[in-house]
Length: 423
Ligand SMILES: NC(=O)c1ccc[n+]([C@@H]2O[C@H](COP(=O)([O-])OP(=O)(O)OC[C@H]3O[C@@H](n4cnc5c(N)ncnc54)[C@H](O)[C@@H]3O)[C@@H](O)[C@H]2O)c1
Image 1 (cartoon, rainbow, N blue to C red):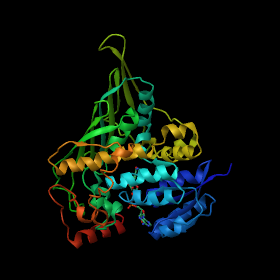
Image 2 (cartoon, rainbow, N blue to C red):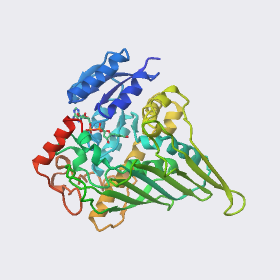
Image 3 (cartoon, rainbow, N blue to C red):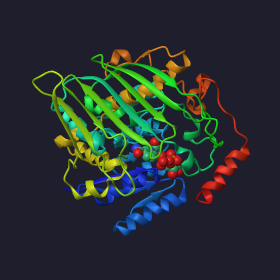
Image 4 (cartoon, protein in one colour):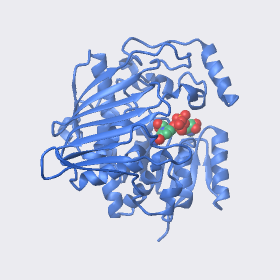
């Protein structure tokens, strides 16, 4: 069997997928696109070191013409859907980094492009495949703790220290223009894959802003977003993410079922540069009420593959999204089962989009449409309200309900210099 030919669009975060593709037994990297020449050169050098000669493109339109079966989207987080639609229409399978879409209108367009093309769309929400969250997913599906009643997902990452290296001092970088509940799928996503329950209602909240953080260009200010979500069976989820003070950051999940519970170890980092692995705790009630057994252990790898061990960044997660995408294209059961499809991706993304509508509307709960149903789509098909002027047109939203924090050019120049100086 010849290997799948895969291209990568965006060579920062995309390097993670590039490394997996360079060694994957069933796929090969054929092209990379990035308008930033140093990132592109780095991708080319990595391929060369692996003995591969790949095509390098600065323009997406040129990249689109390359002979490839599938593309990984690791471009700007708010621009995945329009590029995914173009690629699906050109007959390519798509693996999309987070987030799936910027607006409800894009959610509808993306779903319809997947349905019309018949191609595989997979969502690379890697936090669903961390050693601890993936273990919880597999144990939940065996029915070990019963049906979910309550869950929490937490992605606390104070990015102030790395802001120069992730926004480069660009005023219009998506990270400067997002709103507090946008980046919700690291905290909410794993609860959805573990429980396989659809979100039906969301109420959004935003913390106060931390005015002690020096100005770095973030228009919403330093704060955290919270989504209180009702799942289809009535269970409640608290999802929290953003800039709160905790080092190392917190990537924690807990799921309470009708027969027990599972949670990650709060006071142990879920991953460190040294590769420390996170424990989980599982409680299962026995025959007698309120009596049961606790287990506490470090989960192992699922695919006992040397690549899963090698590309184990982000808590062991970074191999799986690409791997299951390839498996799904090849029609293998693991890929069918564990790859996150477009409907689940959109469910996860809509939680943050509609939580923000809730925040703008005095925390009124918002119903989350089930866009699997064609008859629910028309209501959202033209809804382009968001914080991106290029997409929203007249429906531009502020980045925070209290209004945007505006910054002088000097702030962005300072941040740019910090980035260039490697600070
Ligand atoms: N899942 C994770 O753990 C994780 C971690 C980091 C980033 N991400 C995601 O990865 C994506 C990229 O983030 P990032 O950290 O790499 O930073 P980024 O968004 O600044 O980088 C995106 C890269 O894509 C390139 N790019 C964007 N639009 C382009 C275009 N039209 N033509 C050519 N090149 C273009 C940029 O030059 C840049 O190098 C985002 O979706 C982000 O959410 C995910």
